[in-house]
Image (cartoon, rainbow, N blue to C red; front, side, top):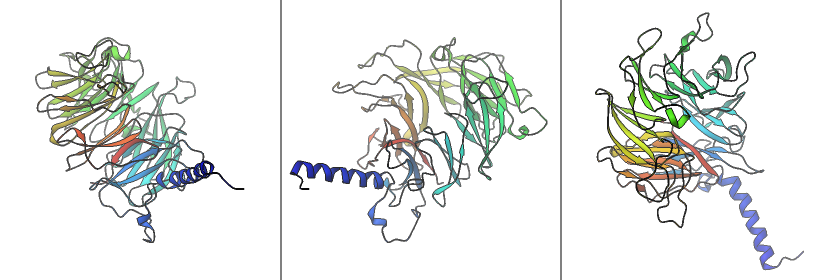
Length: 428
């Protein structure tokens, strides 16, 4: 059969698409041909979770040269074997940098990735979806919050323990509707936060699987969702979401972690406009959130969030700044004192409006100036690159690379096929 020009072009285009899906989804570059190497050989890498909705390819973890901001000339992890699930969306790296945990929301698969081998060494199918996981300080166990997991004879919700040595799910700790986890630096305590509750569940990991009850619950909060720990782990600063989470008022609540059980500071709460995520820098706590019905003072967006700079030693709010709205759940400090704050479900301002914006805010900690880049979409990953003026951001399914000296996209960018959903550095 002979094709006309248009028919031939369509056929060629389809063939090219198939090849691109097979190769681009893997982070493959022809320069690797004939090298004989199955790993990137890089010593400073970032992994990018890449989800693809396609019947003939799968998601993977792309490997980025974090010194040069280019894809490694090798297949993406899991692209050939499907070893990271259908749609990896959440990454976590062990403290010793030997493993990366990749959670796939498409099939609730938790994959264990050997960072040295750059391949999956095993998977665990979780009994529900997760938005939060932490890893023990000795890199031997992962703790995963499963808010809807069914527990016999109890309300849904549990903390699932995964052994990183055996690659198997082990103990289950029932915690109703547990959604978010915050862990102390030494790994001795995990604070678990449940939907629509005014309590905090405190887990002692060393007691899990013993005759001692590993769980203590303390009250007096206002829809708590996260916590930051002091450098010595003696104090936890709990973020009360308040009205944003259908509670009362947002605040910071100080908890003494040296007592048994931990005790709430009797001096009371530090009020803030909103609080869903924070970044602790010495005695300053940067807190982001969105109070319901907060109008923007400038720009085309109808609602805005707030970043509060809290002096913990003086128990006071030093200043506030207007940022995007949405539920803020990503934050990282880049070089030059630039704090990157990401949200989901924000009010996107769409083109052709000249005030186009999405869910990313960049806060200058020296001047309090705020930059909101003109890109739409949820922010699903933020990673500051060590010892460089660079921050990787996964927003709206794309990987964007920012220069912290300008708060703008740098010239070198990486075009990723599919959806970039998270990014993590995996080397010291």
